Structures are given as C-alpha cells and as structure tokens.
Figure (cartoon, rainbow, N blue to C red):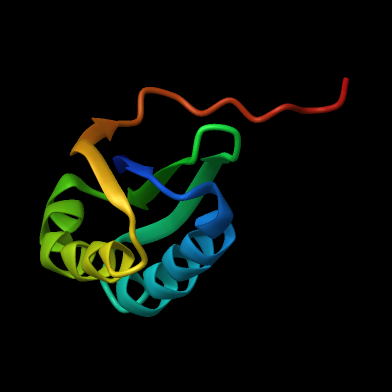
Length: 101
C-alpha cells in the first residue's frame, strides 16, 4: 500500500469546510480510479493545519491519480488553503490493528 501525504495551512474558522471539501471530492474523484483505498484527514485546530492522506493499492495507481488530485487541491485553494511543501509519497511498512486479549 502507498500513501500520498500533504499538509495544508487553513484558516482555523474554515477547517470544517475544507475538511468537508476534501472528504466529498476525494470520494467523488478518487473513488472512480483503480486502486483507491481511502482518504484520511487530520486537523490541528489550534494552528490551522490539516494533513490529508490518500491511500492506494500500488505506486502505479497512486501516480496515475496525480492529475485528479491536483484538481481537488485547486478547489481547496479557492477556499483559501495553502499547501505546505510538496506532497510526499510513502510505502506502508506495517499496519498494527489493536485486538482484545
């Protein structure tokens, strides 16, 4: 599994609107693409930051989503969002899921 991780600066008062934009647009746009496994967003309300994580089955499928991802981000720019640096791509090393003993 691969992930594209991007950090955004957001007016703290607009965090919920921006998070909703990424939620609805990632489902609409990425959901139509092969290999899309989901999108997660984490917000820091005190500092006006959001981290978005799109997850993909393979590196090739992640790379193929690039143009679609730029469209989602362009919509966020219209909401006043600024991207911090460039998105980063990571391969999953492991996934720990808690279980009851």
